Length: 181
Image (cartoon, rainbow, N blue to C red; front, top):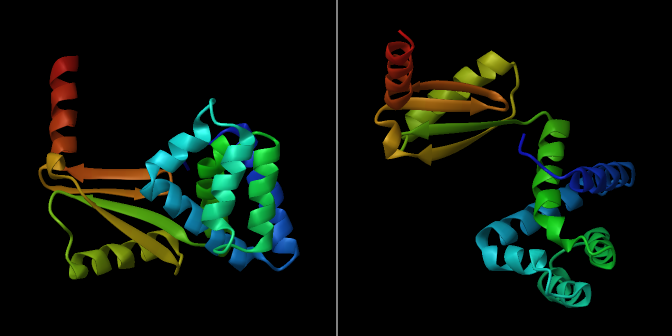
């Protein structure tokens, strides 16, 4: 799980519990995913929200303009609350952490497969089957990353567990053994 501020965790916990209790969890999850994606794809917006020279009112107006017609009433109220409390700067953390809470609540396992060259569909399916077998979970979301610097092999991240079977990882282990001796 990524590092998030204590304030973001408090907001997420309260909002998540409220959304679940009122039957609005699916809608909230969709809206939070939209916010997370928007902030990820537009880093200038995230920078704007973190800027100390921009007023809370200006931040609220921009957020309203972007998300008012694209999100439900509960998210719009959360955005207003964050602006009122001058906490719009943690909106990205809140959206990402909400997604993590939602996946955990739904029993979805997040997996990242890093390979030196793009993983074809057959390889992805093989890893999905193996992860399902290891975790005992049927709901697995596999994200693939291509990183030529690992040279070959793979790095598999399942939650907090990391399996590094890359050539780079093996070379680093050999190097550390040589340096220790």
